[in-house]
Image 1 (cartoon, rainbow, N blue to C red):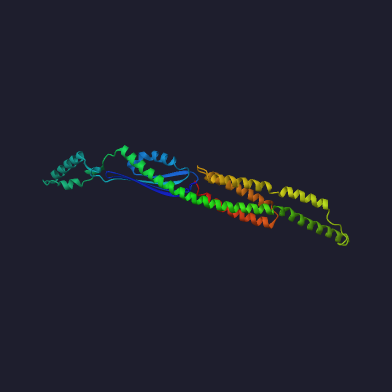
Image 2: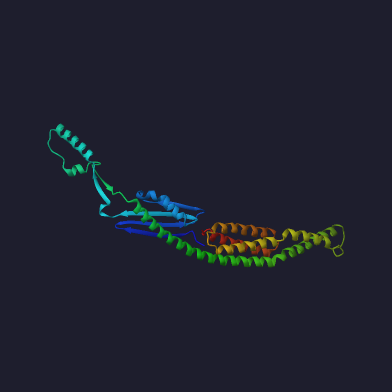
Length: 303
């Protein structure tokens, strides 16, 4: 299990040529790669993208690649001879028009626009590729190492929270019979109140009024027990817990599957809450929802 947050740095130095690769990753639904590279290495963008994609499944990754050539032959001064001759001809004509014989100094000519320029030496693409791939490989090793360490910490936290959620499920299961018994008591009380009210309206003493029909009461309770049963939801919830524990030890990216399971957690717990007529069970459902939300927040960090 890997986190999607991490940082990695790598560098290569070959005879005055230096290439560094810096990677930063954060959460994202998919793998999203953003580049910042020197123009001389732009031809490597596809290679860099494929290399990162082969090792990361999800996350937004900022890629910063820097190249510097400090060799003495890295730059050279280029003289535009044709342009300087054109400048010279123009100056001769100006001198002729002004009737002077002064000639401009070389220093003056060198400062004229575009008379000279500083060019970078031609780079060896093979060497650039080798240096970039080496620096990128080191940066990816550091990045994935950090994501792995953080992922292990997340897994430990998820296990603790899942254990708490499993305890809440067991407590809900223990309280489940109360849903029916509470309903039976409330229904019997309401039926008794209805009989008493009817008896008073008919001039019959409440003490001699008929008690609620046991058969009618049993039928209503049976119907409620069928509608309010949470056995299936509790069983599915237990199955989802088992699936999550299996994913904790998987050797492939599990973030999407965990996110899907969390949605299933919510669905089952919401159904249990909707069926519950017990204040104790409702309180446990609220606690369970809080734990699921904590799980969901942590899972957003997992690749």
